[in-house]
Amino acid sequence: MSAPDLALPDDVDALKAMVVAKAEKAACLEERNADLEAHNTHLELVNKSAEERIARLTAVVKMLERSRFGSRSERLRTGALSEEQYGLVFDEIETGVAAIEAQMENVRKTVVFQHTTSGAHG
Image (tube, rainbow, N blue to C red; front, side, top):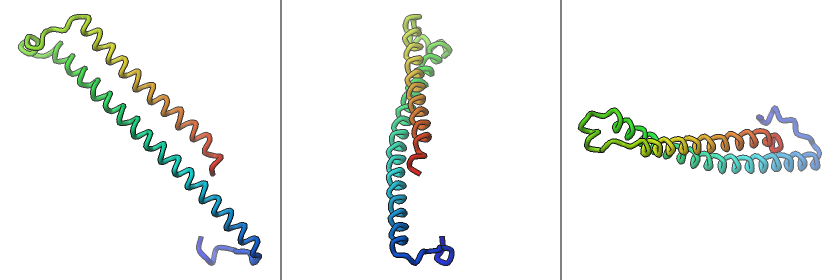
């Protein structure tokens, strides 16, 4: 809004009301911005945690692939995994994937909730 486009009233009380309204709107926007920054920080932590779990699960999968499909010397050196060990590894993978999915679902619910309630701020 440039100065020539702004139609200001001559009444002092009306001008005061406009200033108060703008200050209230600015306070609401600052509060909303702080909320979004806090949520962004939370999402960054969730993302970092998920990335760490994914890296750990990827390492487990690579270890399984080497153990199962590596050259014969690699298989002899590391020893063959028993069915029980394979089961434990797959349980770890399933648990890790389920944890990541649950974390992502919680984030989705939070984002949807904040999106539906953001109309109260603006």
